[in-house]
Length: 99
Image 1 (tube, rainbow, N blue to C red):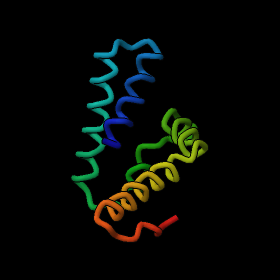
Image 2: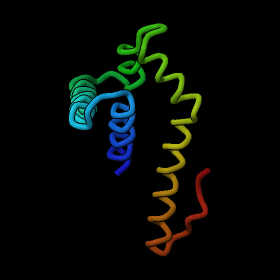
Image 3: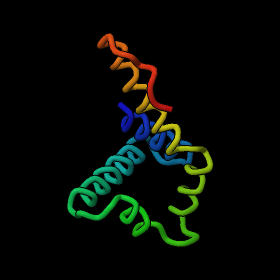
């Protein structure tokens, strides 16, 4: 579900920029598919892969800056912790853990 939410946000941004929903959907799906295939085809750390496709002062660098400024990593990690805590609650366990 997390990835679908990300995809939906990316598609909506593409539509906002003037792409048709169909074109935006294809672009997002192909981007994520390519990224997943690239990651699966190598044993390099994901940070190295990210850096290898981020040109200094380029378009990706600008987008990455905005994601980091918006606390993207923290929001994603907090969501994963919330999911884990909820699973503990549902199983009757102690969910008072994590950040």
